[in-house]
Structures are given as structure tokens and as C-alpha cells.
Length: 67
Image (cartoon, rainbow, N blue to C red; front, side, top):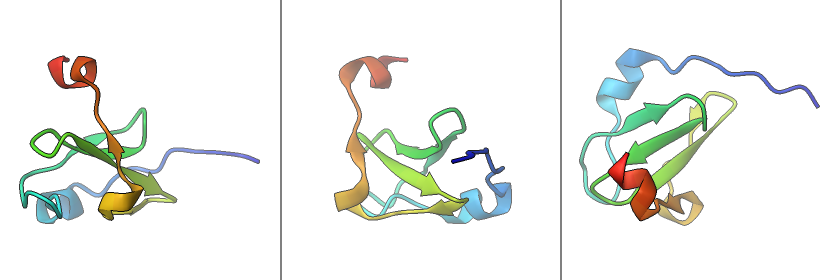
């Protein structure tokens, strides 16, 4: 299965907010995730589509938050 990175549309990123905190999201291209530092969650981006469901997000570690 071939995997490739899609660019996240910067205009879309400006409009999206964390569904939990309503705060800003940062795109982590390497992991293909949208990160909400305030909620300590990382939402997956699959095939260029952000999955902004809390139950699909992973919890960020203290080390990730410190970086």
C-alpha cells in the first residue's frame, strides 16, 4: 500500500478549531495530525481529511507537549 503526504490547506487550517476547547490547531506534517496543545490531543488527518472526533484523537504525552 502506497502512502503519501498531502499538504494541509492553510486556509482550511485557519478555520478549524479543536472541537473540545475551540482553541487553535497546529498541523504536524510528519505525523499527519492536527494538534491541540490546550486539549492535549492530536487528531488524525486521513487522505487529507481532518478527523476532528475526540474518540479518534490520541492523547499527547508530557514529552510531546514540552517540545
